[in-house]
Image (cartoon, rainbow, N blue to C red):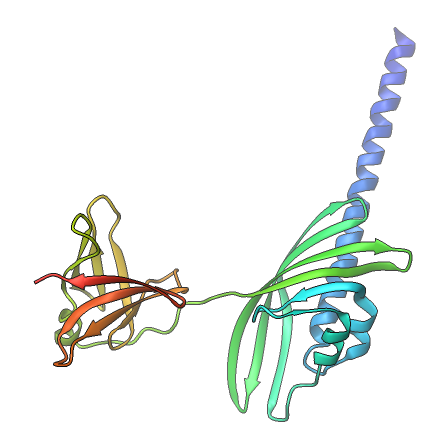
Length: 244
């Protein structure tokens, strides 16, 4: 019994050591990939091809935020310094890694600051990268970039203008919503659904805070009277008609 207990203790100690070693290895890998990722980001503005040449796998597939797919040669050809008058940099804001053997999947959000001829633009991007370990070290095998949408700035409409949008709107004979002006926005009420508040982006165009991919675009007839609105999710419209 005593010997069995000693053997069990030894196995547990060994297991703990292995777990600790694996954790340290994962942490070290994450730091390597984070450093490599920041190097790649730093190399974009100056068009530093050598950095991207080093880290890209020959078989890499890179999908940018405009849905363009490129291989390594195309990526390196595309990489050019920012034009005169533009100054920008990208910095990792959030970084997470999942490691499985010689493959690591990384997702990171990056903050971009771009001085565009004296005007500062702030943007954010979400990257999901696949790295694999090769005989010469970690190399980027796949990447997909998404632009992180943000709410637009709201404008203030005078009360009389804002309240012209109030009324009842119908999608079908069974589905309708009522809009009322409240504060600086429109509150839409629909049976069985939570109320939704929309803020004016400009006249006839409203957005819902926290839902930057969609807009509520009001429609008018030839005389300027509001006839309804479209729920526009990027380029796709769902039409609602104003009830008499």
